Amino acid sequence: MLADEGVRLLWHPSLSEQTGSQARDVLEACARGVQGFDVLCVEGAMLRGPRGSGRFHVVAGTGIPAIEWVRRLSERARHVVAVGSCAAFGGVTSAGSNPTDACGLQYDGVARGGLLGAQYRGAAGLPVINVAGCPTHPDWVTETLIALARGTLRGSDLDEYGRPRFYADHLVHHGCPRNEFYEFKASAERPTDQGCLMENLGCKGTQAHADCNLRAWNGGGSCLRGGYACIRCTEPGFEDPGHPFAQTPKVAGIPIGLPVDMPKAWFVALAALSKSATPARVRENAHSDHIVAVPGSGRPHSRK
Ligand code: SF4
Image (tube, rainbow, N blue to C red; front, side, top):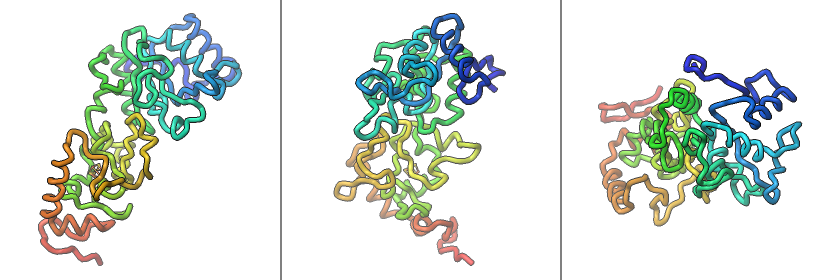
């Protein structure tokens, strides 16, 4: 697909034949400007430690820290693409006390800066393009590369965190198969329940910018479809939620993390109203791992 769009892979650590000195020669030629290239794709967090030396991650056989390679190559690139939330924001590598002093290419969590600095722009004028996600959706990567190859990705196509808006203008909540349970606040209590995972099991799909439930993974999946709560993996700082991922922290019974764009008072009022109007079918199905009440029957569907 990428080849059809005119994208030629110069070198990739897993997909290319060149290894060892051959791979180092490619990197060196690119860094010196002998070999031209358009897009530098970087996966993984930038390890600045210890003490800013970057020597926690030295590229094998070169004796040069990865952060130095990235700095050199980014000076030559027309575009720099951070593939995944670690490269974009630091991600799980920067969690907790962050002993390796990990950061993203142009962000350190929510703060602009990172390895390359807030003012960095590729030769074509764009900041680092953050294809965030942990993991990132393969389609987001290919769609970004194709847009760059066609010259159609502009600054206005990136959101406040540099993520392509074609996927970041959506919320994970959009298209979730549990939407009916959310509407009536019919909540799952156990991981195997079919109900909405927001109230009890930590789902942050209403706060996470991504189209995971509109653009199926592997042709048909998503975290929610697999029974896992959304943990906001496309957002900076998701790795340190301050609570277990599969639990919803609450104050006075109200989830702390409310849907984006929704005032707390409205959410509380709507939730109370929704719960009072929950159809028996929805309530029963929410607390089961399979359909026990079918639409329109008005009575439970017995399982044989
Ligand atoms: S489980 Fe999460 S994404 Fe799905 S409807 Fe509930 S809040 Fe939205």
